[in-house]
Image (cartoon, rainbow, N blue to C red; front, side, top):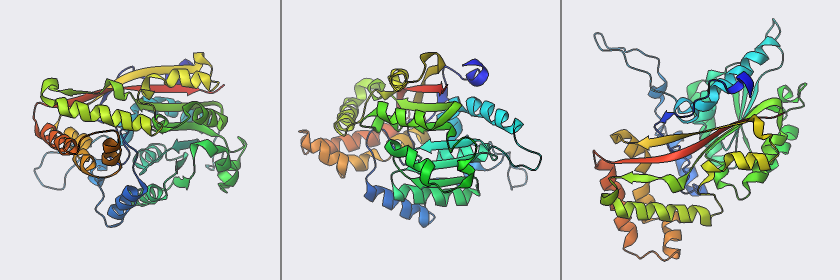
Length: 349
C-alpha cells in the first residue's frame, strides 16, 4: 500500500475493548439508547469533557495535568496515519481562498459520536458524516458535538446496507463535487461483528469509496477474551461464554476480528491493498475494570441479555451469581481482562 499506511503499527497498547455506549457482547436496545440520550440531555452523560482539556491547571502551584488520550487515539489510533496521508494529498488541491475538494470521511455505526467528533477535531478541514440506525444515538452524538464545539461533522440516520441512498439524499452540495459524492475514508469500529451479512456490508462500503481512498475496520475477537486470575473467576468466564452465544444467536460473528482480511477479499478488495494487524486490548486498572465491566451486573439481572440467557437454559440463580462475579472482579486489584482485536486498512483501487 505504499506510504499510505507506512506508519501503521502491528500492536497498540489499548485500554478499551468497546465504547461505553455500544459493546460487542450485546447490542443496545432502543429503550436503553433513549435512556442514554436522556442522560446526555440532562448533562449527566457518561462522557467526561475534561478528558479533552489541554495540558495545564488553574490552581497555582499545582502540577500540570496530562491530557487524557481521546477515544480515537486509544481505539482507532491505527488509522490516523492513513487519514493524515490522504488529508495532506487533498490539501495540495485546495485553492488559496480555502475552496476545493475537501476530504470526506464516513463513520459507519457512529453510536454516540465520540470517535466521530475526535476525527472531526483532528481533521478540521475535512467533512465528517456519522451514520447510525438509532435516532437516539444520533441525538446523543449531535449534543456531544455541540458541547465539544465541533462544526465540520453531521449525523445522519441510515443503514450500512443502504449507503448509496446517503450519497443521493444527503443534500449537501459539498458531497456532490467532482468525486460524485464518494468518500475518501470509510471506517467502522466494532460494527461489522454485528452484521448479519458482513461481506455484503463491506461491499456496500467499497461502492462508496472513491479510487485511492481507504476502508478502516477494527473488530474484536470474542473467543480470545480471557479473565485473570482464571481459576478465581470461572463463573465470569461462564457468563462471557454465554455473551458469545447470545451475540451469535442475534446474527453476529464472535470472532470477527480474525476474519476482516478474508471478508474484504470476498467483497472485491485486492488482497495486495489490504494491511492487516492485531492488538490486545486489556483492562487491568480500577478505571479500566469499571469501564469494561460496570454495566454487566445490571445486564445479568434484567434486560434482553438476561432474558436470552434464561431462554438458553440458564438457571434462575445463575444471573445473580454472574452479577456478583462481575462486581468482585471489578474490585479485585489483581484482576484483568484481555482480548485480541483485528485491524485492517484497505485501499480501494
